[in-house]
Length: 333
Image 1 (cartoon, rainbow, N blue to C red):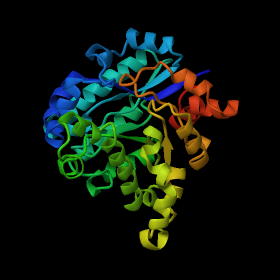
Image 2 (cartoon, rainbow, N blue to C red):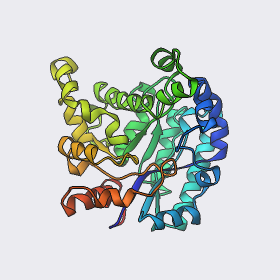
Image 3 (cartoon, rainbow, N blue to C red):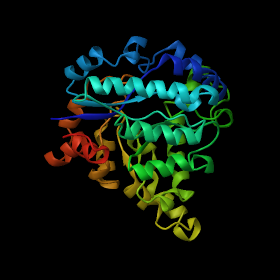
């Protein structure tokens, strides 16, 4: 079976160094949680995160992954004075990896959203010149969601280019972390509660709902967003959300659930749960589900087995494994 994994990361050291002060400001416990690595399987060795060559391909081969869509980490925390240059370099690095192995790699553009007009221009370059298939945005920029007026150029350009935005979790703002997660817990427990255990996913689900409720998809009805981790909790609350936010209150063109089913796609991000898969097939529909591992924070082992064990007709499994990604991202079949 052909398997395309679309949330597969790599690290650029220059971006990591430049982003770290802002990440630590947003979440003071962040460095303690991830630097300690205590009991945490999300901490790959640096050489694995950096690798865009034979080691990565060998791991894909060993576990049945046909193609990865690459994405850089941490660009939303870059200082504005260095963001444009560093993001351009990291996109060139990803483009070189794709050019070397076009049968195995594609890429999402990193965007310097701290400089929004430049971010829109970089998306143009990445899609038009480098052949990238969309963008990945890692959480808020500062305290702002993408529906803030200054980011409209990025959303407009994405819609015009007909490429999706992958909304990936980022570090929650410090105010959110303090009010919701801090208070008497062990620092490592706090840091992980506010990030990978819970906070990342709530944040990203709210980010998508902000886009909906701000009317972004009424302005750009063809804009597509991808959400990992089975839709960042939103599918499991769609009925409740629609009940509490009917159109007479939102004044939107469509019910909230329609935006999720028509403007969003979801992936598992390595959460290989058959129960969640079945729920999302029933709630969102098979055409809106694609595959992802979240490599190398999660390993490729188990990816192929998850798809083969799914209680789905063969064509439905193929849609999740590769056909839906080929259609949305215009990837070669």
